[in-house]
Image (cartoon, rainbow over all chains, first blue to last red; front, side, top):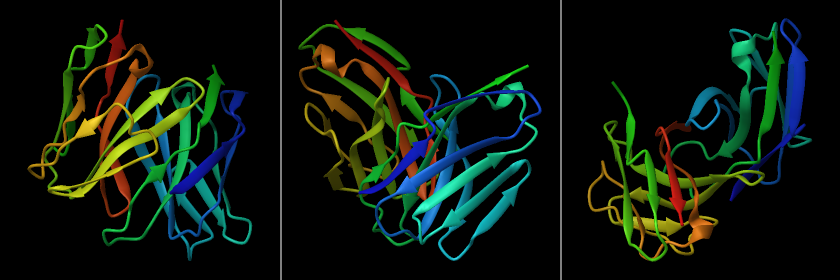
Amino acid sequence: SQQGEEDPQALSIQEGENATMNCSYKTSINNLQWYRQNSGRGLVHLILIRSNEREKHSGRLRVTLDTSKKSSSLLITASRAADTASYFCVNTDAGGTSYGKLTFGQGTILTVHP
Amino acid sequence: EAQVTQNPRYLITVTGKKLTVTCSQNMNHEYMSWYRQDPGLGLRQIYYSMNVEVTDKGDVPEGYKVSRKEKRNFPLILESPSPNQTSLYFCATLNYNEQFFGPGTRLTVL
């Protein structure tokens, strides 16, 4: 299985501050994705970074990837109360039909206080 | 609108009473998957399907069955539910590395 483990487990910050979450994985990687989950709801895809990329931006999101350390980080800049959610990472194979088992970590619970 | 639907959204049942949670997608994706989510354990994959008539076990398949007779539907079957299957269940599809999740089914087994 392809596994992501997020760190820290919980993060509490004030609105306007930046939030950084980390993800480590054990297997080889082709792509890594980050998802957000609002309480009790389905996960929503945020951003994907490919193995040949080191950094990617999408709005207030910045994702980095270090394949030598098998780790990724998600940075949310200028956080808002609406960013309060759980964040998960998972790595998947690139295309084809070889997705197989997918394993999510426990996620990072982010709380942004107004 | 691209979507994954699950039914029912909420279900309270009793031990041993067979139930089925349906999942349907309108995106023509080949890959579909079921997860359960429990406090402190994150999302764990139950079963997945790479295409019609192709299913395989995830990390926690015990006590569950699935079928994939057509591309759009991937029902999750609990033949004899037990209280330890009380959980929040998500169905998802996967296409080009992006997963699309259903809204979730909260199941309580008494």
